Image (cartoon, rainbow, N blue to C red; front, side, top):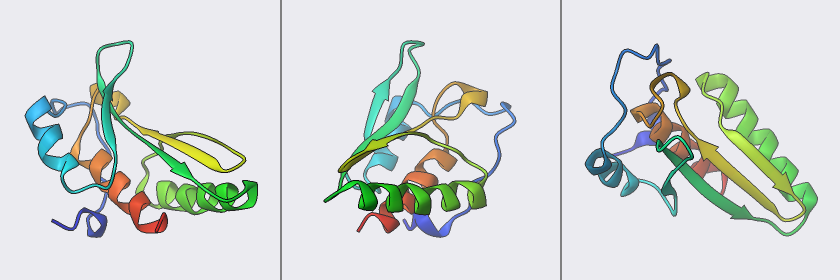
Length: 112
């Protein structure tokens, strides 16, 4: 499945979050993303990226922010010298949706 070719769909909160089985199925289409559980017991996607220096980290974040704006889906970001951490979550459903996996796949495409 080529998730990076799909488009994120804004979530209005009228769909249920993915089940653990659905999450496990879609994780197979991503590269090294983890499904973690937050303090509210909801799943989110997380991935750590490594870079040679601050400039590469910032360049990655800038590319990622363009994708996030185009898709209308905005992850939580943390970055600094040689690293970036990306967390993706659909707030409207307090969990994960197909759009989260689409965004993760698009992020994977720029991290190679």
